[in-house]
Image 1: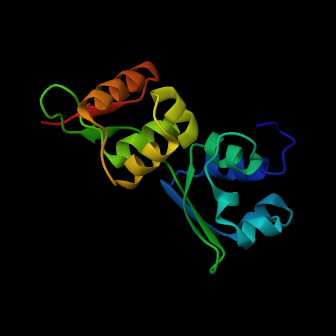
Image 2: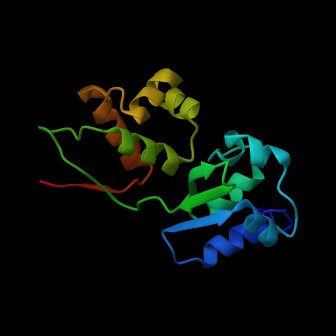
Length: 161
């Protein structure tokens, strides 16, 4: 993030935080910024999305090592959470079977949108969405491929067993 960004003070505040979770009111964010949030931040959940491109505000919290985990537009509050650094998975046979949390964590580690991860894996964006929602899990073959992508990206997880 460039030092001249309006959201630089938020990045610095979050970097100084030693907390795994930080909840701020929109008013507190505005005090940090020294400026009002745009109207869309108060009315559209999408403004708070953890997207990797085209959103200076998301770059601020993501560069600080946080993701937005909850937004309450009624109470005008946002919760930032540090993602887990290491994930535990239980292998079934040889491949690790990937679950919704692990798929989402890998995608965020890669700093990909669902569409970008879908392109990387050769599946539809809807498939990634369904995996992340727990509608169904990746197949054994796709789990092997996800493990290869994770290894290539230095995504850390360990098996328990």
